[in-house]
Image (cartoon, rainbow, N blue to C red; front, side, top):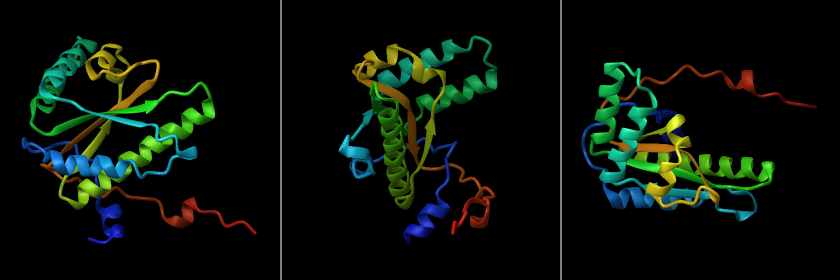
Length: 181
Protein backbone atom coordinates (compact mmCIF):
# COMPACT_ATOMS: atom_id res chain seq x y z
CA UNK A 1 0.00 0.00 0.00
CA UNK A 2 1.18 3.51 -0.78
CA UNK A 3 1.32 5.96 2.10
CA UNK A 4 -1.33 8.12 0.37
CA UNK A 5 -3.73 5.16 0.30
CA UNK A 6 -3.09 4.31 3.95
CA UNK A 7 -3.77 7.90 5.01
CA UNK A 8 -6.95 8.20 2.93
CA UNK A 9 -8.36 4.75 3.72
CA UNK A 10 -7.70 4.62 7.47
CA UNK A 11 -10.86 4.77 9.55
CA UNK A 12 -11.69 4.97 13.22
CA UNK A 13 -12.97 1.55 14.15
CA UNK A 14 -15.84 1.24 16.59
CA UNK A 15 -16.41 -2.52 16.42
CA UNK A 16 -13.61 -5.04 16.64
CA UNK A 17 -13.52 -8.78 16.22
CA UNK A 18 -12.96 -10.68 19.47
CA UNK A 19 -9.40 -11.63 18.54
CA UNK A 20 -6.12 -10.90 20.31
CA UNK A 21 -3.63 -8.49 18.75
CA UNK A 22 -0.13 -9.73 18.00
CA UNK A 23 1.97 -8.14 20.78
CA UNK A 24 5.03 -7.91 18.53
CA UNK A 25 3.03 -5.93 15.96
CA UNK A 26 1.74 -3.67 18.71
CA UNK A 27 5.30 -3.13 19.97
CA UNK A 28 6.42 -2.21 16.45
CA UNK A 29 3.62 0.36 16.23
CA UNK A 30 4.50 1.86 19.61
CA UNK A 31 8.14 2.02 18.59
CA UNK A 32 7.13 4.02 15.52
CA UNK A 33 5.16 6.41 17.73
CA UNK A 34 8.48 7.46 19.24
CA UNK A 35 9.43 8.97 15.88
CA UNK A 36 6.59 11.47 15.85
CA UNK A 37 7.46 15.17 15.80
CA UNK A 38 8.02 16.63 19.26
CA UNK A 39 9.11 20.16 20.04
CA UNK A 40 12.58 20.39 21.58
CA UNK A 41 12.75 16.57 21.61
CA UNK A 42 10.69 16.32 24.81
CA UNK A 43 9.36 12.86 23.86
CA UNK A 44 6.24 13.45 25.99
CA UNK A 45 4.26 10.34 25.05
CA UNK A 46 3.69 7.51 27.47
CA UNK A 47 1.86 4.29 26.72
CA UNK A 48 0.60 1.48 28.91
CA UNK A 49 -0.65 -1.83 27.56
CA UNK A 50 -3.67 -2.62 29.71
CA UNK A 51 -3.93 -6.24 30.81
CA UNK A 52 -7.18 -8.12 31.50
CA UNK A 53 -7.20 -7.45 35.26
CA UNK A 54 -6.83 -3.68 34.91
CA UNK A 55 -9.19 -3.71 31.91
CA UNK A 56 -11.87 -5.18 34.18
CA UNK A 57 -11.16 -2.57 36.88
CA UNK A 58 -11.50 0.22 34.31
CA UNK A 59 -14.75 -1.30 33.07
CA UNK A 60 -16.23 -1.40 36.57
CA UNK A 61 -15.10 2.17 37.24
CA UNK A 62 -16.56 3.31 33.92
CA UNK A 63 -19.89 1.58 34.60
CA UNK A 64 -20.08 3.36 37.96
CA UNK A 65 -19.64 6.80 36.38
CA UNK A 66 -23.12 6.69 34.86
CA UNK A 67 -25.66 4.94 37.11
CA UNK A 68 -28.42 5.79 34.59
CA UNK A 69 -26.64 4.15 31.65
CA UNK A 70 -29.04 2.39 29.30
CA UNK A 71 -28.82 -1.38 29.00
CA UNK A 72 -27.73 -1.32 25.35
CA UNK A 73 -24.86 1.09 26.07
CA UNK A 74 -23.91 -0.97 29.13
CA UNK A 75 -23.84 -4.22 27.13
CA UNK A 76 -21.71 -2.60 24.43
CA UNK A 77 -19.26 -1.26 27.01
CA UNK A 78 -18.98 -4.64 28.75
CA UNK A 79 -18.40 -6.36 25.40
CA UNK A 80 -15.68 -3.85 24.45
CA UNK A 81 -13.76 -4.17 27.69
CA UNK A 82 -14.02 -7.95 27.90
CA UNK A 83 -13.06 -8.66 24.29
CA UNK A 84 -9.58 -9.85 23.41
CA UNK A 85 -8.53 -6.83 21.34
CA UNK A 86 -5.90 -4.57 22.92
CA UNK A 87 -6.33 -1.48 25.03
CA UNK A 88 -3.58 1.10 25.52
CA UNK A 89 -3.58 4.03 27.91
CA UNK A 90 -2.25 7.21 26.32
CA UNK A 91 -0.25 9.50 28.54
CA UNK A 92 1.38 12.89 28.10
CA UNK A 93 4.06 14.38 30.32
CA UNK A 94 2.81 17.38 32.24
CA UNK A 95 4.31 20.85 32.06
CA UNK A 96 3.63 24.04 34.02
CA UNK A 97 4.14 25.93 30.77
CA UNK A 98 0.86 26.15 28.80
CA UNK A 99 2.61 26.31 25.43
CA UNK A 100 4.77 23.29 26.22
CA UNK A 101 1.68 21.37 27.41
CA UNK A 102 -0.03 22.04 24.07
CA UNK A 103 3.08 20.99 22.18
CA UNK A 104 3.35 17.81 24.24
CA UNK A 105 -0.28 16.89 23.62
CA UNK A 106 0.17 17.55 19.90
CA UNK A 107 3.18 15.22 19.91
CA UNK A 108 1.14 12.46 21.55
CA UNK A 109 -1.51 12.95 18.85
CA UNK A 110 1.19 12.65 16.18
CA UNK A 111 2.42 9.46 17.85
CA UNK A 112 -1.10 8.04 17.82
CA UNK A 113 -1.36 8.85 14.11
CA UNK A 114 1.88 6.92 13.50
CA UNK A 115 0.46 3.96 15.42
CA UNK A 116 -2.86 4.13 13.59
CA UNK A 117 -1.37 4.34 10.12
CA UNK A 118 1.13 1.54 10.73
CA UNK A 119 -1.50 -0.79 12.18
CA UNK A 120 -3.97 0.07 9.39
CA UNK A 121 -1.35 -1.00 6.84
CA UNK A 122 -1.11 -4.30 8.78
CA UNK A 123 -4.88 -4.89 8.77
CA UNK A 124 -5.69 -3.55 12.24
CA UNK A 125 -7.77 -0.58 13.27
CA UNK A 126 -7.75 1.84 16.19
CA UNK A 127 -10.04 4.12 18.12
CA UNK A 128 -8.83 6.91 20.40
CA UNK A 129 -11.37 7.41 23.17
CA UNK A 130 -11.52 10.00 25.93
CA UNK A 131 -14.21 11.03 28.38
CA UNK A 132 -14.75 11.12 32.13
CA UNK A 133 -12.97 7.81 32.62
CA UNK A 134 -9.63 9.43 31.77
CA UNK A 135 -10.06 11.87 34.67
CA UNK A 136 -10.36 9.20 37.37
CA UNK A 137 -7.46 9.19 39.82
CA UNK A 138 -7.61 5.40 40.33
CA UNK A 139 -6.30 4.90 36.81
CA UNK A 140 -2.93 6.34 37.75
CA UNK A 141 -2.48 3.77 40.50
CA UNK A 142 -3.56 0.87 38.28
CA UNK A 143 -1.34 1.99 35.41
CA UNK A 144 1.52 2.90 37.78
CA UNK A 145 1.85 6.46 36.51
CA UNK A 146 2.34 9.54 38.66
CA UNK A 147 -0.56 11.95 38.18
CA UNK A 148 1.85 14.79 38.98
CA UNK A 149 4.08 13.83 36.05
CA UNK A 150 1.75 12.30 33.45
CA UNK A 151 -1.74 13.20 32.26
CA UNK A 152 -3.93 10.43 30.90
CA UNK A 153 -5.23 11.80 27.61
CA UNK A 154 -7.19 8.80 26.43
CA UNK A 155 -7.27 5.18 25.53
CA UNK A 156 -6.41 3.56 22.22
CA UNK A 157 -8.44 0.50 21.31
CA UNK A 158 -6.60 -1.72 18.81
CA UNK A 159 -7.90 -4.75 16.96
CA UNK A 160 -9.09 -6.42 13.82
CA UNK A 161 -12.03 -4.41 12.43
CA UNK A 162 -15.42 -6.09 12.46
CA UNK A 163 -16.91 -3.25 10.44
CA UNK A 164 -15.02 -0.61 8.45
CA UNK A 165 -17.12 2.52 8.17
CA UNK A 166 -17.34 4.38 4.87
CA UNK A 167 -15.16 7.40 4.26
CA UNK A 168 -16.64 10.60 5.65
CA UNK A 169 -17.15 13.51 3.31
CA UNK A 170 -14.23 15.92 3.53
CA UNK A 171 -13.92 19.56 2.59
CA UNK A 172 -11.94 20.24 -0.55
CA UNK A 173 -8.46 21.69 -0.25
CA UNK A 174 -9.73 24.96 -1.69
CA UNK A 175 -12.02 25.28 1.37
CA UNK A 176 -9.22 24.97 3.93
CA UNK A 177 -6.23 26.54 2.17
CA UNK A 178 -5.58 30.24 1.77
CA UNK A 179 -2.75 31.36 -0.50
CA UNK A 180 -1.36 34.71 0.55
CA UNK A 181 0.52 37.10 -1.71
